[in-house]
Length: 207
Image 1 (cartoon, rainbow, N blue to C red):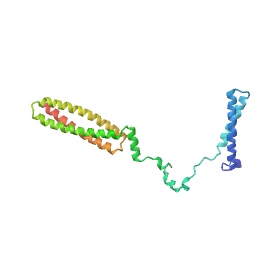
Image 2: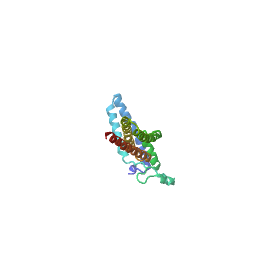
Image 3: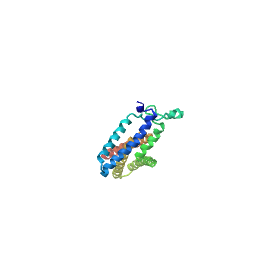
Image 4: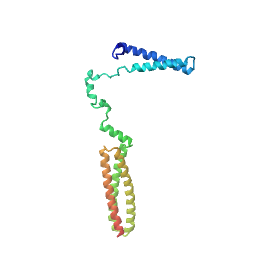
Protein backbone atom coordinates (compact mmCIF):
# COMPACT_ATOMS: atom_id res chain seq x y z
CA UNK A 1 0.00 0.00 0.00
CA UNK A 2 2.98 2.29 0.46
CA UNK A 3 3.31 2.44 -3.32
CA UNK A 4 -0.22 3.83 -3.64
CA UNK A 5 0.24 6.47 -0.97
CA UNK A 6 -0.10 9.72 -2.99
CA UNK A 7 1.82 11.64 -0.33
CA UNK A 8 4.83 9.31 -0.30
CA UNK A 9 7.99 10.27 -2.12
CA UNK A 10 8.24 6.75 -3.55
CA UNK A 11 4.83 7.06 -5.20
CA UNK A 12 5.69 10.44 -6.73
CA UNK A 13 8.99 9.17 -8.10
CA UNK A 14 7.30 6.06 -9.47
CA UNK A 15 4.63 8.13 -11.21
CA UNK A 16 7.26 10.37 -12.79
CA UNK A 17 9.04 7.32 -14.22
CA UNK A 18 5.75 5.75 -15.29
CA UNK A 19 4.80 8.86 -17.25
CA UNK A 20 8.17 8.97 -18.98
CA UNK A 21 8.51 5.27 -19.85
CA UNK A 22 4.82 4.90 -20.64
CA UNK A 23 4.82 7.86 -23.03
CA UNK A 24 7.82 6.41 -24.86
CA UNK A 25 6.07 3.05 -25.32
CA UNK A 26 2.85 4.70 -26.51
CA UNK A 27 4.76 6.79 -29.08
CA UNK A 28 6.64 3.72 -30.32
CA UNK A 29 3.38 1.81 -30.71
CA UNK A 30 1.88 4.65 -32.74
CA UNK A 31 5.05 4.91 -34.84
CA UNK A 32 4.99 1.17 -35.69
CA UNK A 33 1.36 1.49 -36.73
CA UNK A 34 1.90 4.61 -38.85
CA UNK A 35 4.92 3.15 -40.63
CA UNK A 36 3.22 -0.23 -40.99
CA UNK A 37 6.27 -2.02 -39.65
CA UNK A 38 6.21 -5.72 -38.71
CA UNK A 39 4.71 -6.23 -35.28
CA UNK A 40 2.76 -2.96 -35.52
CA UNK A 41 -0.36 -4.60 -34.08
CA UNK A 42 1.48 -5.95 -31.05
CA UNK A 43 3.30 -2.67 -30.44
CA UNK A 44 0.07 -0.70 -30.67
CA UNK A 45 -1.57 -3.08 -28.20
CA UNK A 46 1.33 -2.69 -25.78
CA UNK A 47 1.24 1.09 -26.20
CA UNK A 48 -2.48 1.40 -25.53
CA UNK A 49 -2.24 -0.99 -22.58
CA UNK A 50 0.56 1.11 -21.13
CA UNK A 51 -1.55 4.24 -21.57
CA UNK A 52 -4.42 2.55 -19.74
CA UNK A 53 -2.07 1.67 -16.85
CA UNK A 54 -0.86 5.28 -16.69
CA UNK A 55 -4.44 6.56 -16.47
CA UNK A 56 -5.20 4.01 -13.77
CA UNK A 57 -2.35 5.09 -11.50
CA UNK A 58 -2.89 8.79 -12.21
CA UNK A 59 -6.27 8.46 -10.51
CA UNK A 60 -4.43 8.02 -7.19
CA UNK A 61 -2.44 11.23 -7.56
CA UNK A 62 -3.27 14.04 -5.19
CA UNK A 63 -4.79 17.07 -6.94
CA UNK A 64 -2.45 20.01 -7.19
CA UNK A 65 -3.16 22.69 -4.62
CA UNK A 66 -1.92 26.25 -4.79
CA UNK A 67 -0.12 27.31 -1.63
CA UNK A 68 -1.70 29.97 0.55
CA UNK A 69 0.72 32.79 -0.13
CA UNK A 70 -1.17 35.04 2.31
CA UNK A 71 0.57 33.12 5.11
CA UNK A 72 3.89 34.43 3.82
CA UNK A 73 2.62 37.78 2.51
CA UNK A 74 -0.28 38.88 4.78
CA UNK A 75 -1.15 41.79 2.50
CA UNK A 76 -2.38 39.29 -0.11
CA UNK A 77 -5.21 38.27 2.21
CA UNK A 78 -6.98 41.55 1.42
CA UNK A 79 -6.76 40.98 -2.32
CA UNK A 80 -9.07 37.96 -2.39
CA UNK A 81 -12.80 38.05 -2.94
CA UNK A 82 -14.52 36.06 -0.15
CA UNK A 83 -17.13 34.62 -2.53
CA UNK A 84 -15.15 33.42 -5.52
CA UNK A 85 -11.57 33.85 -4.40
CA UNK A 86 -10.69 36.11 -7.30
CA UNK A 87 -8.23 38.91 -6.90
CA UNK A 88 -9.72 42.31 -6.30
CA UNK A 89 -7.39 43.69 -8.94
CA UNK A 90 -9.30 41.71 -11.58
CA UNK A 91 -12.54 43.48 -10.75
CA UNK A 92 -13.25 46.67 -12.65
CA UNK A 93 -14.31 49.89 -11.00
CA UNK A 94 -17.59 51.57 -12.07
CA UNK A 95 -15.56 54.19 -13.96
CA UNK A 96 -13.68 51.48 -15.88
CA UNK A 97 -16.93 49.67 -16.70
CA UNK A 98 -18.46 52.94 -17.93
CA UNK A 99 -15.41 53.61 -20.10
CA UNK A 100 -15.74 50.14 -21.62
CA UNK A 101 -19.44 50.67 -22.35
CA UNK A 102 -18.72 54.04 -23.95
CA UNK A 103 -16.02 52.46 -26.11
CA UNK A 104 -18.38 49.68 -27.23
CA UNK A 105 -21.06 52.25 -28.10
CA UNK A 106 -18.47 54.34 -30.02
CA UNK A 107 -19.20 57.27 -27.75
CA UNK A 108 -16.41 59.74 -27.17
CA UNK A 109 -16.03 63.26 -25.82
CA UNK A 110 -16.44 64.71 -29.30
CA UNK A 111 -19.89 63.13 -29.66
CA UNK A 112 -21.03 64.49 -26.29
CA UNK A 113 -19.71 67.92 -27.24
CA UNK A 114 -21.58 67.81 -30.56
CA UNK A 115 -24.77 66.91 -28.74
CA UNK A 116 -24.36 69.92 -26.45
CA UNK A 117 -23.69 72.18 -29.45
CA UNK A 118 -26.79 70.84 -31.22
CA UNK A 119 -28.92 71.49 -28.17
CA UNK A 120 -27.65 75.06 -27.89
CA UNK A 121 -28.25 75.57 -31.61
CA UNK A 122 -31.74 74.15 -31.20
CA UNK A 123 -32.55 76.62 -28.41
CA UNK A 124 -31.29 79.50 -30.53
CA UNK A 125 -33.41 78.32 -33.46
CA UNK A 126 -36.54 78.14 -31.32
CA UNK A 127 -35.89 81.63 -30.00
CA UNK A 128 -35.38 82.84 -33.56
CA UNK A 129 -38.68 81.29 -34.63
CA UNK A 130 -40.45 83.06 -31.78
CA UNK A 131 -38.99 86.39 -32.90
CA UNK A 132 -39.90 85.63 -36.52
CA UNK A 133 -43.48 84.89 -35.54
CA UNK A 134 -43.72 88.25 -33.77
CA UNK A 135 -42.32 90.00 -36.83
CA UNK A 136 -44.58 88.10 -39.22
CA UNK A 137 -47.65 89.20 -37.33
CA UNK A 138 -46.83 92.79 -38.28
CA UNK A 139 -46.49 92.11 -42.02
CA UNK A 140 -48.90 91.35 -44.80
CA UNK A 141 -47.16 88.13 -45.82
CA UNK A 142 -48.39 86.32 -42.72
CA UNK A 143 -49.78 83.23 -44.46
CA UNK A 144 -46.76 82.49 -46.69
CA UNK A 145 -44.18 83.06 -44.00
CA UNK A 146 -46.18 81.00 -41.52
CA UNK A 147 -46.19 78.09 -43.96
CA UNK A 148 -42.42 78.42 -44.47
CA UNK A 149 -41.83 78.57 -40.72
CA UNK A 150 -44.10 75.56 -40.21
CA UNK A 151 -42.17 73.61 -42.86
CA UNK A 152 -38.84 74.37 -41.20
CA UNK A 153 -40.22 73.48 -37.80
CA UNK A 154 -41.48 70.16 -39.17
CA UNK A 155 -38.01 69.39 -40.54
CA UNK A 156 -36.39 70.26 -37.22
CA UNK A 157 -39.00 68.20 -35.39
CA UNK A 158 -38.17 65.13 -37.48
CA UNK A 159 -34.42 65.65 -37.11
CA UNK A 160 -34.44 66.03 -33.34
CA UNK A 161 -36.94 63.22 -32.90
CA UNK A 162 -34.47 60.88 -34.64
CA UNK A 163 -31.63 62.30 -32.58
CA UNK A 164 -33.58 61.69 -29.38
CA UNK A 165 -34.25 58.06 -30.30
CA UNK A 166 -30.57 57.57 -31.15
CA UNK A 167 -29.43 58.99 -27.82
CA UNK A 168 -31.99 56.88 -25.94
CA UNK A 169 -30.61 53.73 -27.58
CA UNK A 170 -27.10 54.78 -26.67
CA UNK A 171 -28.26 55.54 -23.16
CA UNK A 172 -29.50 51.97 -22.78
CA UNK A 173 -25.95 50.67 -23.30
CA UNK A 174 -24.46 53.27 -20.95
CA UNK A 175 -27.25 53.59 -18.41
CA UNK A 176 -24.77 54.48 -15.67
CA UNK A 177 -23.77 57.70 -17.42
CA UNK A 178 -25.49 60.60 -15.67
CA UNK A 179 -24.29 62.95 -18.39
CA UNK A 180 -26.21 61.03 -21.06
CA UNK A 181 -29.36 61.02 -18.98
CA UNK A 182 -29.12 64.80 -18.51
CA UNK A 183 -28.51 65.42 -22.22
CA UNK A 184 -31.40 63.16 -23.21
CA UNK A 185 -33.68 64.93 -20.74
CA UNK A 186 -32.72 68.33 -22.19
CA UNK A 187 -33.29 67.14 -25.74
CA UNK A 188 -36.67 65.69 -24.81
CA UNK A 189 -37.76 68.94 -23.14
CA UNK A 190 -36.73 71.02 -26.14
CA UNK A 191 -38.47 68.66 -28.52
CA UNK A 192 -41.65 68.86 -26.46
CA UNK A 193 -41.53 72.68 -26.62
CA UNK A 194 -41.02 72.53 -30.38
CA UNK A 195 -44.01 70.21 -30.81
CA UNK A 196 -46.24 72.58 -28.85
CA UNK A 197 -45.09 75.54 -30.92
CA UNK A 198 -45.65 73.61 -34.14
CA UNK A 199 -49.16 72.63 -33.04
CA UNK A 200 -50.00 76.25 -32.20
CA UNK A 201 -48.79 77.38 -35.61
CA UNK A 202 -50.92 74.78 -37.39
CA UNK A 203 -53.94 75.81 -35.35
CA UNK A 204 -53.35 79.45 -36.26
CA UNK A 205 -53.06 78.60 -39.96
CA UNK A 206 -56.30 76.62 -39.95
CA UNK A 207 -58.31 79.49 -38.47
